[in-house]
Length: 306
Image (tube, rainbow, N blue to C red; front, top):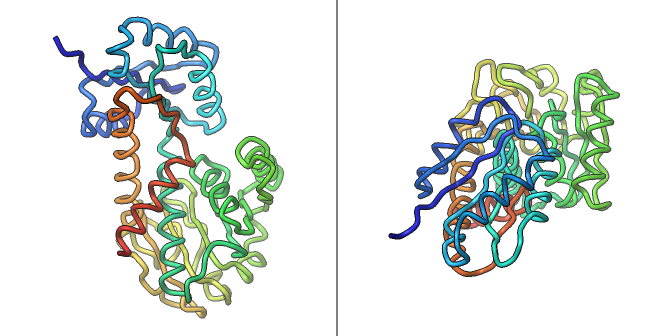
């Protein structure tokens, strides 16, 4: 009898994300098995239970998804899972905590594409990027991806000390010594916005981080992307469906991107990564995270532009 495709889904939280379960099943996984309150030191046992229960020929029908709420923990679990494989018993692993990797990838890719199409082929290289509400998982990865693409990035949070700590963590753990993300306090937004080219609003749902008054002083702003679909908008006058829509009151002619415009790319990116695990055949397994998500999101945007 042909083996079923089984995706073992690990999370540090008490519940597995229903969004991720739906995505997995829609992508073609037959079973999505939840494991909650998982810690890093449990990964080896769980992974080896999964790989050794199937033959070398059928182990390819197994995959592992890592969720949770914390980006660093998710990456530690991904690395631990990879270390726990015993060739030829190996399976693909995909980390996407709180959907942060695929959401941030979509946000940065859509903004990058809009920038190139509307501002004389501009890239992220050398652009001043503010990540507002940036201490959460989406903000962290959006900051990392923008910095890796050559932008000057300020990760902005309510507390300066925490913002600096998170920025340092991103540089150390995700930047490979090549990013120079700086932490900044929310209280300093009025000065920061004056020289910002791009704004990513990544605060919690219903929190507005950029109001009309600040928008009216953003003399260089080109693109403002808001991940929040819950009223009030994270950026004043940017609606969920906006996709390159001129922002009322912008003195620089800035264009807005809403959550639903980015959501389609996020959905397609996550679906494609889940499919990559299904399609491995007899090839080597994949270990997928935010960099792979960004690569796919960029490819999707290129295809859209074409």
